[in-house]
Length: 290
Image (cartoon, rainbow, N blue to C red):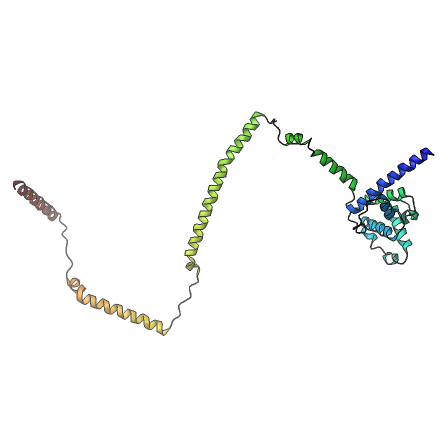
């Protein structure tokens, strides 16, 4: 009797642990039928997932539709609202196709089987739903691991790992790394100079373009009109009258003279040079005597 009680207690603990995993997996998969249900007690979870009800049937139908989208659009869709046994048989057939149960296990689909069997069946179904590969228990383990990793006692080791005091690189690799850093500095300065030069050139080109906008404007062709011809004739008449007056008063005298003739002999220039030199000599003597 005592051994049987211990086994029964262990089974109850296993069921409570399993129902919490199934409920958390449904929440992780964003099942709309458990949204807004903030269940904390395992008894409430067992009541929801393992007791025959329309809500439980809808949850199981949602799981089947998530696994096989064609399940929601099958030919028996119109019959489900009239006969719940049709839906139960279809879910049992899907479970048989997935090799999780038999087609005759209708008690498992309705919720009349044992708690452990129902929870195990639901857990196996949820492993095939996208988003349920990791249950909440796994997430708790990950959070626990991260908390332990970033705990105060492990922070010195983490800091030492991120910033090691001992540089494992050999000396020639260190020198090469430093050389690359130093060689990159002039290139950065050179790039900055080139960028500044390009910016200055672009500004000059834009200014030049703004000053030469008239070159881009299309010149409208001149329109011939009698008024324009009359104005041009008047301007020409005034220019001709002005030129005639200047010619008669100033230019005619010079235009009537014969053009000067230049001698081809160089003796004239030589004699003039000698006379000028003698004159300068006489003047210098006279100034010396005075």
